[in-house]
Image 1: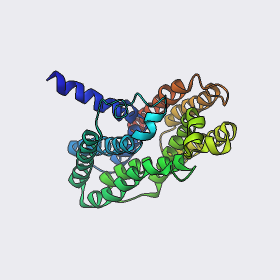
Image 2 (image 1 turned 180 degrees about the vertical axis):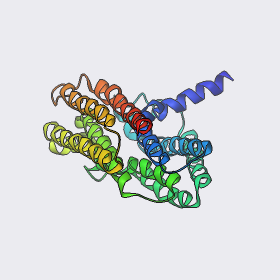
Image 3 (image 1 turned 90 degrees about the horizontal axis):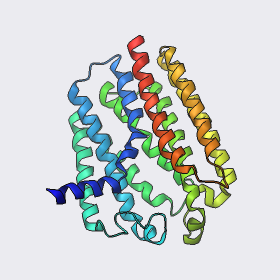
Length: 288
């Protein structure tokens, strides 16, 4: 029993399970907004959660396998589970396969359309692991792959796509892309040495951070557009205002010549932003 518990904890660390909190609230926000005009069951909610966890676990596990040899060379990432020897590639591959099956099965339990869409969605998620080998816009691709989550959740409940939900997904795309650019500033020297692609290593941290700021400005605009197109209760603007201030604080904390607070900006502030968005969506839904 102790062995199983330790393995679960190791797998959880490998996929950085707490980081699920970045995108999951966006998907749950889509569910909450779809709930206003549809009547999903408790099982729909459960299958969406399982699909989200399965898809992200598969993507993160696959990324760790693909990057294992590179991670071993990087002092910051050499302690990760595969390069450190805590998990073998075979064990990790089995984990990816099982996670992928959980995602596909959960999507199939939601609808036939969700089942059909699960295959290209999984491909986009897994393919991200190779983008750093050929394009400096890998951060944008990551944002695109993850921003499919709110769209998928909406389709699962509504049964069709709505242009209104696209604004929420674009908000997630720019949000993820922006903070992934900031996070990658930690590996500029390593990326240059290994011939890997990232925006900071190709154009410099100053320009990359300016682009990140613009992207997070776009995040605010897209969330404002979500408010307008859904006709949300004005209380949502209060939450949106706080989110805007937190995005500004994130960029005040991280400087091109000082990455001391990168973990605070990356994990703590972004976690609060995602949770605030979901709470704001729920609150306005109750008050409408």
